[in-house]
Image (cartoon, rainbow, N blue to C red; front, side, top):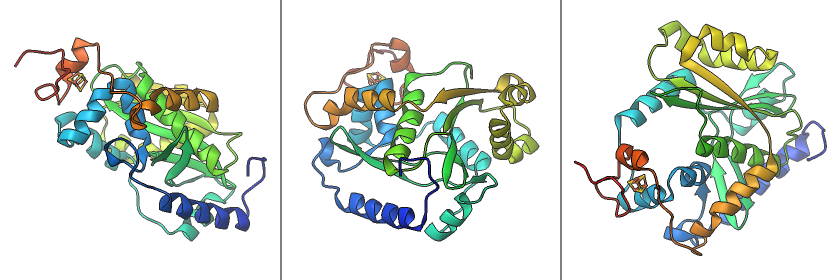
Length: 266
Ligand code: SF4
Protein backbone atom coordinates (compact mmCIF):
# COMPACT_ATOMS: atom_id res chain seq x y z
CA UNK A 1 0.00 0.00 0.00
CA UNK A 2 2.45 2.67 -1.04
CA UNK A 3 -0.32 4.86 -2.45
CA UNK A 4 -1.77 7.34 0.01
CA UNK A 5 -4.83 5.25 0.77
CA UNK A 6 -6.10 4.12 4.12
CA UNK A 7 -5.36 0.47 4.80
CA UNK A 8 -8.38 -1.75 4.33
CA UNK A 9 -9.24 -5.25 5.53
CA UNK A 10 -7.24 -6.83 2.68
CA UNK A 11 -4.17 -4.78 3.57
CA UNK A 12 -4.19 -5.99 7.18
CA UNK A 13 -4.77 -9.63 6.20
CA UNK A 14 -1.96 -9.43 3.69
CA UNK A 15 0.33 -7.73 6.24
CA UNK A 16 -0.15 -10.46 8.86
CA UNK A 17 0.36 -13.13 6.19
CA UNK A 18 3.58 -11.52 4.96
CA UNK A 19 4.77 -11.11 8.55
CA UNK A 20 4.29 -14.81 9.20
CA UNK A 21 6.12 -15.72 5.98
CA UNK A 22 8.96 -13.39 6.97
CA UNK A 23 9.18 -15.01 10.40
CA UNK A 24 9.30 -18.50 8.90
CA UNK A 25 11.95 -17.48 6.37
CA UNK A 26 14.57 -16.93 9.07
CA UNK A 27 17.56 -19.25 8.83
CA UNK A 28 20.68 -19.01 11.00
CA UNK A 29 22.92 -18.13 8.07
CA UNK A 30 24.35 -14.80 9.16
CA UNK A 31 27.35 -14.09 11.42
CA UNK A 32 27.12 -15.89 14.79
CA UNK A 33 24.33 -18.07 13.30
CA UNK A 34 22.00 -15.11 13.42
CA UNK A 35 18.74 -15.32 11.45
CA UNK A 36 17.29 -11.88 12.20
CA UNK A 37 19.27 -8.72 12.86
CA UNK A 38 17.82 -6.19 15.31
CA UNK A 39 17.65 -2.56 14.24
CA UNK A 40 19.33 -1.65 17.54
CA UNK A 41 22.31 -3.87 16.64
CA UNK A 42 22.81 -2.14 13.29
CA UNK A 43 22.55 1.18 15.10
CA UNK A 44 25.08 -0.11 17.65
CA UNK A 45 27.56 -0.78 14.84
CA UNK A 46 27.72 2.99 14.34
CA UNK A 47 28.88 3.37 17.94
CA UNK A 48 31.41 0.53 17.97
CA UNK A 49 31.06 -2.62 15.88
CA UNK A 50 33.25 -4.57 18.24
CA UNK A 51 30.78 -3.88 21.03
CA UNK A 52 28.17 -5.81 19.05
CA UNK A 53 30.72 -8.61 18.69
CA UNK A 54 31.48 -8.56 22.44
CA UNK A 55 27.82 -8.58 23.34
CA UNK A 56 27.35 -11.80 21.40
CA UNK A 57 30.54 -13.36 22.80
CA UNK A 58 30.13 -12.33 26.46
CA UNK A 59 26.42 -11.54 26.75
CA UNK A 60 24.79 -8.36 27.95
CA UNK A 61 26.72 -6.76 30.82
CA UNK A 62 24.37 -4.79 33.08
CA UNK A 63 25.29 -1.20 33.91
CA UNK A 64 23.65 1.39 36.11
CA UNK A 65 22.92 3.59 33.08
CA UNK A 66 21.14 0.74 31.26
CA UNK A 67 19.08 -0.15 34.35
CA UNK A 68 18.08 3.47 34.95
CA UNK A 69 17.23 3.93 31.26
CA UNK A 70 15.05 0.80 31.18
CA UNK A 71 13.19 1.80 34.34
CA UNK A 72 12.53 5.28 33.01
CA UNK A 73 11.39 3.91 29.63
CA UNK A 74 8.88 1.64 31.33
CA UNK A 75 7.60 4.46 33.48
CA UNK A 76 7.38 7.08 30.72
CA UNK A 77 5.97 4.81 28.01
CA UNK A 78 3.89 2.19 29.84
CA UNK A 79 2.65 -0.52 27.50
CA UNK A 80 0.14 -3.34 27.53
CA UNK A 81 -0.18 -6.18 25.04
CA UNK A 82 -3.18 -6.02 22.71
CA UNK A 83 -4.43 -8.33 19.96
CA UNK A 84 -4.03 -7.65 16.23
CA UNK A 85 -7.72 -6.80 15.97
CA UNK A 86 -7.44 -4.35 18.84
CA UNK A 87 -4.38 -2.82 17.22
CA UNK A 88 -6.19 -2.31 13.90
CA UNK A 89 -9.26 -0.89 15.61
CA UNK A 90 -7.08 1.56 17.55
CA UNK A 91 -4.86 2.84 14.75
CA UNK A 92 -7.71 3.23 12.25
CA UNK A 93 -9.43 5.85 14.36
CA UNK A 94 -9.36 9.40 13.07
CA UNK A 95 -8.45 10.78 16.48
CA UNK A 96 -4.70 10.21 16.97
CA UNK A 97 -4.01 6.99 18.84
CA UNK A 98 -0.91 5.42 20.37
CA UNK A 99 0.20 1.89 19.55
CA UNK A 100 3.42 0.16 18.50
CA UNK A 101 3.98 -2.90 16.41
CA UNK A 102 7.01 -4.94 15.52
CA UNK A 103 8.62 -3.68 12.30
CA UNK A 104 10.39 -6.02 9.91
CA UNK A 105 11.76 -6.33 6.40
CA UNK A 106 14.49 -7.56 4.07
CA UNK A 107 17.14 -5.00 3.22
CA UNK A 108 20.56 -5.65 1.69
CA UNK A 109 20.36 -9.39 2.28
CA UNK A 110 19.52 -8.98 5.99
CA UNK A 111 16.24 -9.88 7.66
CA UNK A 112 15.79 -6.93 9.99
CA UNK A 113 13.43 -6.63 12.95
CA UNK A 114 12.75 -3.93 15.51
CA UNK A 115 10.32 -2.52 18.04
CA UNK A 116 9.98 1.28 18.16
CA UNK A 117 9.40 2.98 21.52
CA UNK A 118 6.26 4.88 20.65
CA UNK A 119 4.06 5.67 17.64
CA UNK A 120 1.16 7.99 16.90
CA UNK A 121 -1.39 6.88 14.30
CA UNK A 122 -4.48 8.23 12.57
CA UNK A 123 -6.68 6.50 9.97
CA UNK A 124 -4.22 3.61 9.68
CA UNK A 125 -1.30 5.88 8.88
CA UNK A 126 1.76 6.35 11.08
CA UNK A 127 2.11 10.06 11.91
CA UNK A 128 4.98 9.98 14.39
CA UNK A 129 7.71 7.57 15.34
CA UNK A 130 9.16 8.50 18.72
CA UNK A 131 12.39 7.11 20.11
CA UNK A 132 13.39 7.93 23.68
CA UNK A 133 17.05 8.05 24.64
CA UNK A 134 17.95 8.75 28.22
CA UNK A 135 21.24 10.44 29.00
CA UNK A 136 23.30 11.84 31.83
CA UNK A 137 24.91 14.24 29.37
CA UNK A 138 23.70 17.03 27.12
CA UNK A 139 20.29 16.26 25.52
CA UNK A 140 21.12 18.62 22.65
CA UNK A 141 23.70 16.24 21.20
CA UNK A 142 22.53 13.80 18.57
CA UNK A 143 24.60 10.71 17.72
CA UNK A 144 24.72 8.80 14.41
CA UNK A 145 23.69 5.48 16.02
CA UNK A 146 20.51 7.07 17.42
CA UNK A 147 19.66 8.77 14.14
CA UNK A 148 20.23 5.51 12.26
CA UNK A 149 17.96 3.52 14.57
CA UNK A 150 14.87 5.67 14.12
CA UNK A 151 15.47 6.06 10.37
CA UNK A 152 15.59 2.28 9.90
CA UNK A 153 12.35 1.87 11.86
CA UNK A 154 10.73 4.30 9.41
CA UNK A 155 12.21 2.48 6.42
CA UNK A 156 10.78 -0.84 7.63
CA UNK A 157 7.33 0.68 8.20
CA UNK A 158 7.48 1.97 4.65
CA UNK A 159 8.53 -1.43 3.29
CA UNK A 160 5.70 -3.09 5.22
CA UNK A 161 3.39 -1.02 3.04
CA UNK A 162 2.18 1.74 5.36
CA UNK A 163 1.52 5.17 3.97
CA UNK A 164 4.48 7.11 5.40
CA UNK A 165 3.81 10.32 3.47
CA UNK A 166 2.92 12.16 6.68
CA UNK A 167 5.40 10.43 8.95
CA UNK A 168 7.70 12.48 11.17
CA UNK A 169 10.49 11.13 13.33
CA UNK A 170 11.13 12.45 16.84
CA UNK A 171 14.23 11.40 18.69
CA UNK A 172 13.82 12.57 22.24
CA UNK A 173 16.92 12.87 24.41
CA UNK A 174 16.04 13.15 28.06
CA UNK A 175 18.09 13.57 31.21
CA UNK A 176 17.62 10.66 33.54
CA UNK A 177 17.24 12.85 36.61
CA UNK A 178 15.04 15.80 37.41
CA UNK A 179 11.55 14.85 36.17
CA UNK A 180 8.82 15.14 38.75
CA UNK A 181 6.37 12.30 39.28
CA UNK A 182 3.65 14.25 37.46
CA UNK A 183 5.96 15.03 34.53
CA UNK A 184 6.80 11.35 34.19
CA UNK A 185 3.15 10.30 34.35
CA UNK A 186 2.05 12.76 31.67
CA UNK A 187 5.18 12.54 29.53
CA UNK A 188 4.08 10.35 26.61
CA UNK A 189 0.75 12.16 26.16
CA UNK A 190 2.40 15.56 26.34
CA UNK A 191 5.10 14.66 23.84
CA UNK A 192 2.52 13.19 21.43
CA UNK A 193 0.20 16.19 21.72
CA UNK A 194 2.98 18.72 21.17
CA UNK A 195 4.30 16.82 18.16
CA UNK A 196 0.79 16.80 16.70
CA UNK A 197 0.28 20.52 17.26
CA UNK A 198 3.78 21.45 16.07
CA UNK A 199 4.58 23.07 19.42
CA UNK A 200 7.70 21.16 20.35
CA UNK A 201 9.45 24.39 21.37
CA UNK A 202 6.85 24.93 24.11
CA UNK A 203 7.40 21.41 25.34
CA UNK A 204 11.16 21.90 25.55
CA UNK A 205 10.58 25.11 27.52
CA UNK A 206 8.40 23.22 29.97
CA UNK A 207 11.11 20.63 30.55
CA UNK A 208 13.83 23.30 30.43
CA UNK A 209 17.30 21.82 29.93
CA UNK A 210 16.12 18.29 30.68
CA UNK A 211 14.90 17.40 27.22
CA UNK A 212 15.58 18.00 23.54
CA UNK A 213 13.28 16.76 20.78
CA UNK A 214 15.29 16.18 17.61
CA UNK A 215 12.92 16.16 14.64
CA UNK A 216 14.11 14.19 11.62
CA UNK A 217 12.55 13.56 8.23
CA UNK A 218 11.78 10.08 6.95
CA UNK A 219 14.69 9.42 4.59
CA UNK A 220 14.57 6.01 2.90
CA UNK A 221 17.84 6.53 1.03
CA UNK A 222 19.76 7.44 4.20
CA UNK A 223 18.34 4.45 6.08
CA UNK A 224 19.15 2.04 3.24
CA UNK A 225 22.66 3.46 2.93
CA UNK A 226 23.32 2.90 6.65
CA UNK A 227 22.31 -0.76 6.33
CA UNK A 228 24.43 -1.24 3.21
CA UNK A 229 27.40 0.25 5.07
CA UNK A 230 27.12 -2.29 7.91
CA UNK A 231 25.74 -5.42 6.23
CA UNK A 232 29.19 -6.87 5.38
CA UNK A 233 29.77 -7.65 9.06
CA UNK A 234 26.61 -9.80 9.23
CA UNK A 235 27.20 -11.43 5.86
CA UNK A 236 30.67 -12.53 7.02
CA UNK A 237 32.39 -10.49 4.32
CA UNK A 238 34.66 -8.70 6.77
CA UNK A 239 35.74 -8.61 10.41
CA UNK A 240 34.28 -6.07 12.84
CA UNK A 241 35.78 -2.61 13.07
CA UNK A 242 36.40 -1.08 16.50
CA UNK A 243 36.24 2.29 18.17
CA UNK A 244 39.05 4.77 17.64
CA UNK A 245 37.89 6.81 20.63
CA UNK A 246 39.66 6.35 23.96
CA UNK A 247 36.68 8.01 25.64
CA UNK A 248 34.27 5.40 24.27
CA UNK A 249 36.51 2.56 25.41
CA UNK A 250 36.92 4.10 28.87
CA UNK A 251 33.13 4.24 29.26
CA UNK A 252 32.55 0.78 27.76
CA UNK A 253 31.31 -2.09 29.92
CA UNK A 254 33.42 -4.54 27.82
CA UNK A 255 36.72 -2.68 28.27
CA UNK A 256 38.22 -5.32 30.57
CA UNK A 257 37.49 -8.21 28.16
CA UNK A 258 37.64 -6.50 24.76
CA UNK A 259 40.76 -7.39 22.74
CA UNK A 260 40.47 -4.07 20.87
CA UNK A 261 40.05 -1.81 23.89
CA UNK A 262 42.12 1.36 23.74
CA UNK A 263 41.80 1.82 27.49
CA UNK A 264 44.46 0.16 29.59
CA UNK A 265 43.56 1.55 33.02
CA UNK A 266 41.88 -0.30 35.90
S1 SF4 B 1 36.31 -1.44 24.62
FE1 SF4 B 1 36.34 0.03 22.92
S2 SF4 B 1 36.70 -1.21 21.09
FE2 SF4 B 1 36.07 -2.59 22.72
S3 SF4 B 1 33.87 -2.81 22.50
FE3 SF4 B 1 34.20 -1.18 23.95
S4 SF4 B 1 34.18 0.70 22.75
FE4 SF4 B 1 34.50 -1.00 21.34
